[in-house]
Length: 499
Ligand code: HEM
Image (spheres, rainbow, N blue to C red):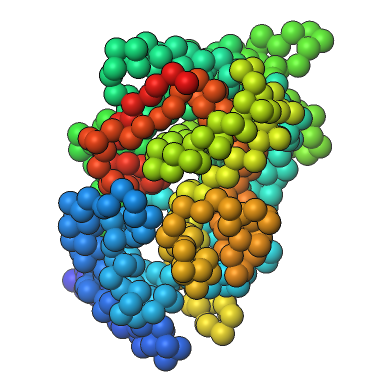
């Protein structure tokens, strides 16, 4: 008996010792070994700090950066939104390694290497999974491998120009509702926060275009998703203590409640849509209808309910704030460059008059939009060779698009100036490298909603410029901030005047 207990205790000691060794290796020795490995290739960066890596320093730098108010005419926004890169690039060069907890993160700005990562033909690079990720679901944005390929093939038809054209009238009518509201406020001399206006407008547009007649239920699901997103952002940037996501904290309980609400609302919309399909008709012109249609008519397994729910979440997540920010920053730039505001308005009048633009007239608008900033993250799923660099499995590769878009080496000495004419000979000729312009990414995972977003942004802008001129309010503070997407921290107060 005594001998039996002795064996159990000895086994326990061995297991605990093995776990402790694993932990010490992962949190202590491995980062030091990797630091040496990266240094031997000339990749340097801030030293690893136990458990937190560089997160503590990044947090402090970001906290201080949030207090900065930039000069409105400055396009170099990196001191505010990427203060860590702003500090480290001059110190360590643009290919540097820093630490997300105990995981190494290598930045890549060389367009050739960026192209190699984003072309990703052999599946070496997989998406970084946000955890927890109730917001994006397991949709197209985060899937990898054969699951991603099948889903992309099923969804592609829904985003073809042909399918998108019928949505233009919905985009037009949503915008005109906003125009009426802005007109009323303009007549009282009120200033308008264009940023929150565009947030509401693009939410309306995505709910109408995604769910058609189920718009109201779609809006309820959308609002739950926005709250979930806020909770998720609050959790990002901290160290995730394993298991903490299962504790009954107020924030976790709020998250679970919203997840159930989002899930149930979306399931109801989908069930109703399937049940109310006319005998000889289709599911309708909205994105959800086209998605169900495509999943039934394409060869191979149908998309099941959970997959469709995941893709609805993806449309909300990927298709709302991105386009809203594009519109916000475009209006900001047009208030700073009045001659361009006038040029665009003249072009709109010439091609569309006072009509709601259709696909034809839109295609004639040469509106240039050059401020779209995103950071794309990928993870190496096995040891790989990137250019001359050896990248060990598990390294997170970070492509700071904001930095690439502002690089003087690639865009010239006027990189920080507003010069739409640099695109006059096409996107690939605007910089020294054809792939230096990456607002929608590139390669097989290029944004599937690119046409949708550009069509939406052009329609909204045309309708606004036909009716209003925009002047920046003296209350505006130039404080771009990163809430997953790039937004003005205190909104974009403008005065609108009828033209
Ligand atoms: C100005 C607006 C937009 C910008 C700047 C933008 C940007 C991007 C970028 C950079 C990626 C690639 C990420 C990567 O390489 O992993 C992406 C992917 C994606 N975008 Fe967009 N996007 C916009 C609008 C939209 C809209 C309106 C939708 C849908 C309604 C959408 C849906 C998606 C989806 C589903 C993906 C994942 C594609 C895949 O991985 O196969 N996006 N977007």
